[in-house]
Image 1 (cartoon, rainbow, N blue to C red):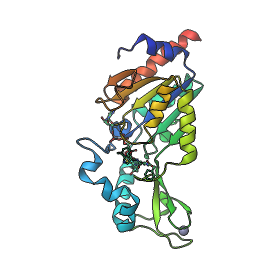
Image 2 (cartoon, helix red, strand yellow):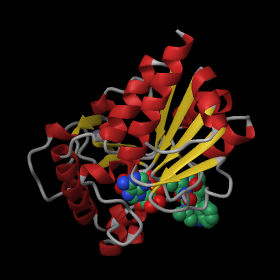
Image 3 (cartoon, rainbow, N blue to C red):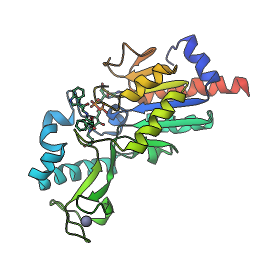
Image 4 (tube, protein in one colour):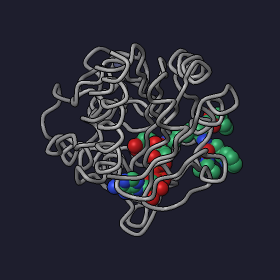
Length: 251
Ligand code: BJW
Ligand code: ZN
């Protein structure tokens, strides 16, 4: 069992609003590669060639194929202990929100009820021209970008690429939840991508106790009230156990 501060125990006992801000590292134990770092996706594929709109216009089939490859990994993966621990927090607190940068759908699959996806969802798609929405499952296994049945436009994944705006309503809701939160867990993110990471700083600014969980320190570590170095599946399982203990005391 990890050792935690008295302040965190106290917050776990009295908190009403809990925010989890998550990144690719939370899904690493499910076998989904992160973006940055030694085994990161971007050591093999350059973001500027794949994760932006110009790249899609230049070479839609290549970008589509990259997403197909990642969808396959995501669909074969299962949520891990970290996703399940977060979902179980709902048993103990009246308001648990997950703000995720991930597009892999694993928080939803683990049973979390309030998931705000800042960078979209890899299982969803829409037509560039008319906006018609498509599920991934509507396409046969294809290496070419599919076209819209309504207007013939190219279909793109519903994810947020560099230089694109985040979904405005979702981001506004995340900002509101950050400002309300009593504890904000910042899990498995390198904390370098804006404006998403601004949500964690906002939580801190509005008085949340910020707890970082990562296998290494990040740009957020100096701002965090407490940092746990280790795998999120293990650390969040321990913290869930502590939350459960604290909660029983007040019942
Ligand atoms: C574990 C673990 C385990 C491992 N347990 N931990 C200069 C300065 C500041 C900002 C900018 C700038 N130039 C441009 C910008 C803005 C830009 C930005 O932030 N760039 C920076 C990178 C420099 N942002 C944008 O463009 C955003 N839009 C925007 O700003 O709009 C306004 C605007 C409009 C028009 C013009 C200009 C501005 C959009 C950002 C979209 C990001 N999209 C991606 C791809 C999504 C689709 C897809 O999946 O393909 O989102 S990029 C990628 O990074 C993905 C992620 O969600 C995001 C964050 O990555 P994350 O989750 O932190 O993963 P990693 O891999 O970086 O880190 C993993 C961590 O896990 C590591 O720390 C490990 O240690 C840890 N870990 N195993 C716990 N078991
Ligand atoms: Zn269309």
